[in-house]
Image (cartoon, rainbow, N blue to C red):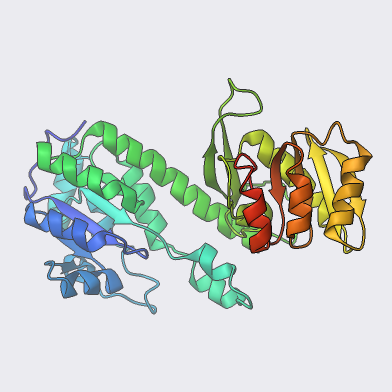
Length: 355
């Protein structure tokens, strides 16, 4: 732990360069009031300055201008030396003094919105390439590597914890720095996985496969009550269950999601009006007819015992008449592309049904 080894100008420094500016003005303002020097780049520096936060531009620190249309801003020894230096090593301190490098104690960075860019309809490869962040991941990884001295924040939700610790003790604890470093490595790994998935999507079975997933929600328990579980979705494209809206009922369980996934996959195979009933991830009834009501009756009659406590998926808007039939038995989940207001009013009588 290097907190006790300090000098080379006792001022604490935060390097801030963010794409998502949520909470950044407030955080930087707090740091400035606590005596920290704020170093920043481009749009972030502009936003902070307009909010009245004193800012030192990166090029003032490095003596080198931003070049190549912003592709090179922070890739400079005075930045990365300030982040990576170990102040407990005399050789590092001597070299910093010789090169005029000042220590940087906090790196606050989040990255160009690659996922948001590539999911836009009609996005070009050139647009995708220009949203690949280079300097940001480099700073994040450098700070995370040197977490024995440097803190790194990639998530605005962590700003308050950082500020609170500085106010209470004048520093960010090693425990917090380690937690932030772990999150930072996960952040850059996820970012690289998104890029690899986008550009490597043509190959069905690549030699190396990294899946960029984002947590949708924590689940009450797994397949069995003693197991933990969470629901994750592909970060690059929100489709299927990742885009559903729950209108009624308790939180979905692992088994609900598993059954719902099976039911929805099957019902979307049909172009005709269809109702699918699933229990334990297996179809126990499928009905296709001219109306949703008739399709439901066929699905129900295929196995009127197993459908009890099952999950239903419908590929048409659910109407009042069908809803009245459905509430005659216990169902865990009913999924449909839409529900009429009258159907919702009927299903509301059975508040345990998840819609």
